[in-house]
Image (cartoon, rainbow, N blue to C red):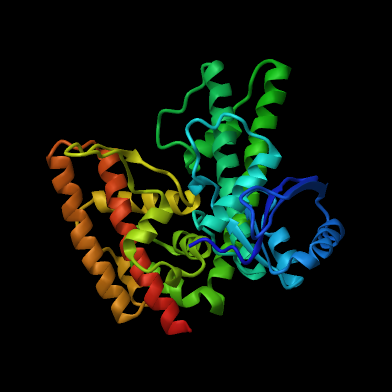
Length: 369
C-alpha cells in the first residue's frame, strides 16, 4: 500500500559520496536531488535541512559500505530501510543508469512497497560474522598458495604421486627439495614460505572462531546444529552468524529462498520450466550447506564423532538430525538412481538440509530467549 503521508528519501551510497532523491508526499517524482560527502557530519547536516518535510523515511541498497549510514540515521531518530540489491525490480527497457536515477527509483519503489528490507545485525553480530569471513578469506588464500606452489613444481617436472598431497609425507618431500638454479630455488622458497604464512594465519583464525563459538550467545544453537550429519563446529557457527536470527523466517521455504538454493522458474500457461538455482541470497551460508550435503552421499550410519556431537545437543535437535539423515540419504540414492548427476543431487540435498537447519536454529533460539 502506498504511503503518501511520508517524505521518502532514496540514497545511493558510495565510498566518497551519497546521492539523495527526496520524494515529497504528494509527488511521484523527486522534488530534490542532491549530492554530498559520505561523512557523519555531512549526513547529519542533510537530515537537518529536511526537518520541515518530516516525517521522513530513508532507504538505500545493501553494499560494501555496510550499515554505518543506517546506524547514523537511526541514532538521529529517523527511520531507515536497507534493501536487498538482488531483489530490486528492474524494467527491461530501462537502459540508462545514473546515481540520481537510482536514488529516485529506490524512493519510488520503497513508497510502493516493492522492496525487500534486510535484517540489520547488531555490532556484536557483525563483528563475529566478520571474523568468520576473515577465516574464509584465509581458506581461499591457502588454496591459491597451494595451487601456485604445485604448478611451479609441475613446470619443473616435480610431481608428488606417493600419497595424498599436503599430508605429512608430502610436506617432508617439499622441504627436502633442492632446485638447481638459484632463481628457481628463491622462487620455490618464496612460494613455500607464502603457503606456511597463510596456514599459520588460518590456524590462528580457526582457533579464535572455535573459542567464539563456545560463548554463551552462540553455544546453544551451535551445539544443536552440530547434531546434523556433516556439520561440525566451524560449519555450525558459520550458519549461526550468517543467519543471525532464524526466527525472522516464518517458514522453511522462506529460509531456503534466503540461501539461494531454490530453482529459477519460467512458467506460463501449461508450460512449467525450471532452471538452475537462483544464487540470490547469502553465498557464505550456501557454501557451507552444500559442503555439509556431501556427507549425505554416504551410507546412513552414525560414527563415533557424530555420536559424541549429538551427546551435547538437546533431544529435539538429535531427533531432527536423525530424521534429516534418514530422509536425505534416501533421497540422494533415489536422485542418483534416476540418473541425476551427483553434483545436482547434492545441491537438491543442500536445499532440503536448509529446512532442517532452519528448524533446529529456530527452536534453539526460542529456547535461549
